[in-house]
Image (cartoon, rainbow, N blue to C red; front, side):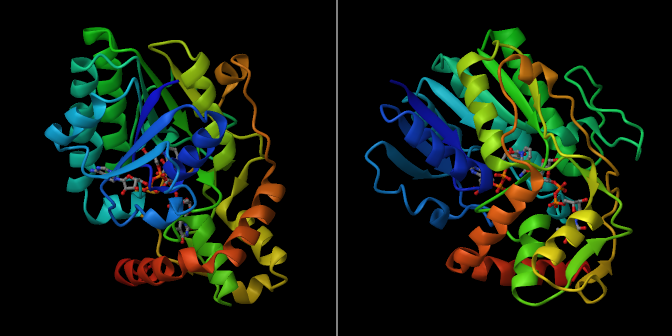
Length: 336
Ligand code: NAD
Ligand code: DAU
């Protein structure tokens, strides 16, 4: 039995992780520390909020007093909390540095002070920068860091801090750097849920620039199985990359798949909008190190997309208000 602190558990991946962990480890207790920013939704954990093994604490990872109190109660920290939306980091970088860099350092200090047994840090493939189209190149654990957005720069800094605390203070850490996730409880500001909810509403999907941007899409459940495995079996001090088995696919091709799934016509349902500044062309991941630990993705893209579309059809209660807010943001950025 273990007490686990999850930071950012009301976000997309954190909420899926908590639901899954409570099911897999019914003797463990989870504390979820979340500030409930625009990206944190208490509704994403409505089905587990009465679970006796689950406790929600509203608060900021930058608040060292509060962090000390919750870290003192646990053996394991799983750190998801972050400002995570690249487009928002273009509009206002300051909060990305505050939460992603300072917040991580505050957590690490508390983890050292209270001698936590394991600190697992959730990070992103975006720290490695961008790969050229059709180069066949992939990111690996030893690829040089080359972040190109305020978001990825702040996540890169947080990764460096985690590694530094392992070397300097012997904090037992592990890191996973994952590709783009999709699945249930994904905020409609992000590509997949934005396209799906647009199509449900009978609106065209919005494609940035020429749409020839490649992401390594992974179902959130596969990501969670990877985190679980690294927490249980990963080597302390190590980093593991997490990616998919899908054949390379660009945003335009994903949009076409979805439009077809909705039985609509491509001509009417694709709208090209202003590109993201500094838009990374391509991400691709070599996850053979994690495969050697015994992991591989279960979902193929078609199954994952079908299930995700069905989830959004069935759960309008969850996304309807978020959709309105997301589209207001895109009105401001000129990407509507
Ligand atoms: P999200 O934006 O959906 O959720 C972030 C959560 O953190 C929210 O609940 C928010 O309220 C909370 N939070 C933000 N600032 C906080 C603060 N100062 N104190 C406490 N809580 C705070 O993010 P996500 O998509 O679930 O991503 C989770 C983690 O995984 C992030 O670290 C992200 O960098 C990483 N990641 C995401 C993806 C992806 O595709 N979404 C891929 C790889 C890695
Ligand atoms: O690679 C992992 C990263 O994936 C995570 O670290 C980030 O937290 C997560 O937000 C995600 O970042 P992206 O910028 O890749 O995701 P996003 O959903 O914002 O965009 C995916 C791609 O789709 C990207 O090429 C931009 C494009 N896009 C996005 C939106 C919202 C569009 O073409 N149209 C859109 O409406």
